[in-house]
Image 1 (cartoon, rainbow, N blue to C red):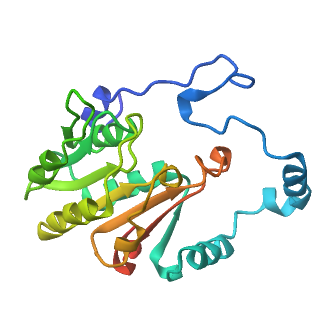
Image 2 (cartoon, rainbow, N blue to C red):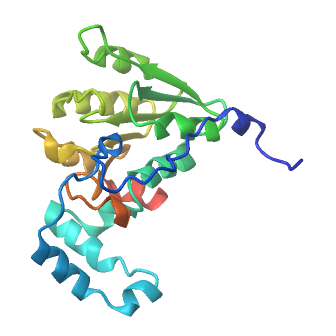
Length: 235
């Protein structure tokens, strides 16, 4: 036996299936279903050098381009290997064993997996029979017991979207208790809006984006968080 965190024995992780997935529709992971245009992909492949594989990546140019794209400072960007790592980092800076984490259900499974790994308890806010999200229930659930709030917007697999005004109401409630909130915008490009405009206004808010969905780049493992400078420093 080894010394470990005894509670991790109760964390359930499913292995990826061993059957080949290439050539199938692959709806299970929300991946791009069509190939990139030949010319575009060929140009990309031809641009690669041995240095790109041998050396650790230099991320400054990407951060600079993202800052320009979003019209924010480079100091407001935290680069991650996908949103998955962003979620874990929020757990690392804020969640202790027995803390309470507020999440939606159903949603991205890693929200609750990380709660299990960190020995935290999840308070799960669900939907009514018409698949309408109980936003008021989530708002009312934020308290001094809350260590972290995770909210996918839009949420998968339901697809509901919360307007920016509601997001800010939740952020302000969290701010009152000093609670960090991560808004997971993995599917933002398929929605009518974004909470990025709030991210540099509120010190407790991080907004996560990814190249895995609309950009069709799941295999390159690139994501990022936009937030207040002090929050990004902590991350």
